[in-house]
Length: 241
Image (tube, rainbow, N blue to C red; front, side):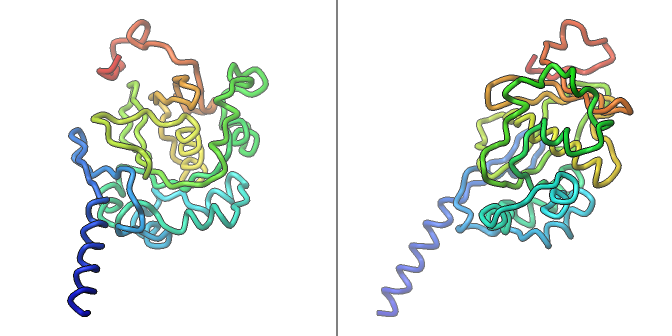
C-alpha cells in the first residue's frame, strides 16, 4: 500500500512539472511565463511582491486610492496570488512595473484623475471609439509592464501576463493596460514614463494606438500611423515597421 501511494504521488508531481513551461525570451534573456496551471507552480503573494518590487509596484491599495476601484470578492480572490515567481520578480524588479489591473476603461480613468493628466477631453478623437470604453471584462489580473522605454523613440509596449503565450515575438498589449500603468505609476511615484517618447499599443478591436508625450500638457493618445513616413531621423523606429 505504501509503495502504491508513493507511485501515485510521484506521477502527480510529474504531471505538475509537465504543465510548467518556461520559454526564454531571446531578446531580453528573461524567463517569460506562458499559459499554465497556477496550482502547479510557485506563486508570489502581494505583500512579498511589494517588498521585492519597491516603487515599481502598483497594487490593490493603489488602484483603490488613485482610480477609485471597488474590488469584488471574486477579484480579490484572483489577486491573492501573483502569477510570477520570486525569481522572475527579482529579475524584473528594476526594469518592469508589477500592476494589479481592474476592469476600468480609459475614459473612466480620465474622469477619475486630475484633468491635467490627459491632453484632451471633450474634443478627444477617441471619445466615441469602442477601445476607449472597453473595461476589460469583469475580472482583475496582474501584469508586468516594461519600463525600458527608449527616449525619442517609438517603442512597442511590452507586458507580461499569465495568459500571454510566447509566440516567438512579444505581443503588443492592450492600450488600456498601457494607459492604466502610465497614469497609475505617475500618481504613485511622480515619474513620467513616456515624457519624450512613444509606446505603440493595441486594443481588443484590433486598433493600434500611440500612447506618447506624457508632458505638462498631459498624456497624448493618438491614432496609429506609420512613423517611417514622418518621424524625424533622430527618432528610432521598431524594426517591425
